[in-house]
Length: 99
Image (cartoon, rainbow, N blue to C red; front, side, top):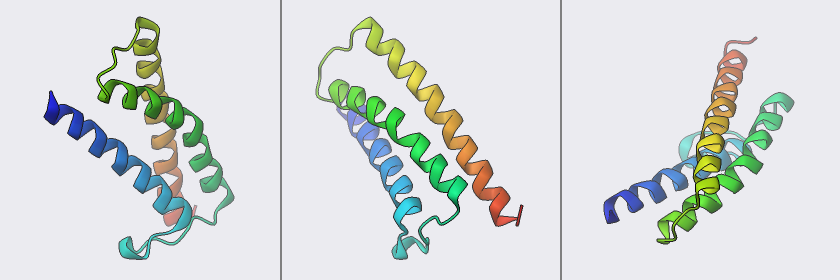
């Protein structure tokens, strides 16, 4: 249980760091800040669902029981985040190919 919580926290931190690196750039990773308006918009599209998802994850990691509606919300948000993340990935790949 403790390992699962640590893993969940680590995955959440990695997600936030990745998005911030794309938004702001990260010299250590060799990333420049996103300048493409569509990529910037797509990064923004991840913000609100992530905030809601993250709040529920933090609640669960803190040992609080999630209610049935919160569990459904976690599921819905995770699906939405995957869809938006895939859109971002596709957009970045297209831009890298000059499309």
